[in-house]
Length: 169
Image (tube, rainbow, N blue to C red; front, top):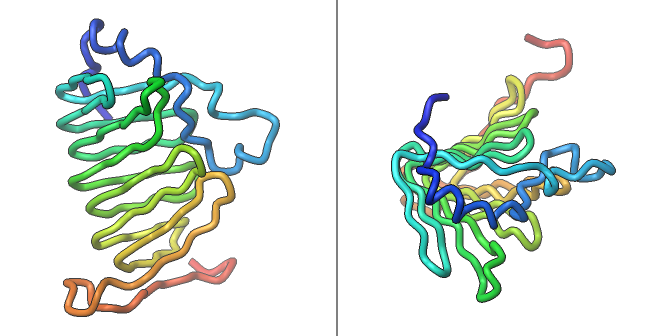
């Protein structure tokens, strides 16, 4: 994927964010922690304030083998400057080595590794596909819970999926 990297001045200000943890699925239980891996940022534009960093236009945050991509990404920091939450809007993708999630909005809580994707959610794992209105996914445990869209929503109120048994193509 091609995206412009933020300017050196903005990127330097973002360097303090190397403590952000987007743990790699599967690596979370291993001795090797992705929280020690560098974080890469990319966007068409970006800005920084005391409590947040905003990325706009083909925004992307990667760490280890996980990637969060969206039209806009905002990383919120606490008073000490430590990252607390990442919010992504527009067409949102969260991709791990084994699965990908797509939705209209995502909120990632760094303290507990919980990613919540809402709005026309699609979860892919290999050929298996699950759709719904809200996905709660824990990057540390790989646990996922899908719920349907609210009644009257464009996607209806059902969770739907297609699963292929082992050996079936």
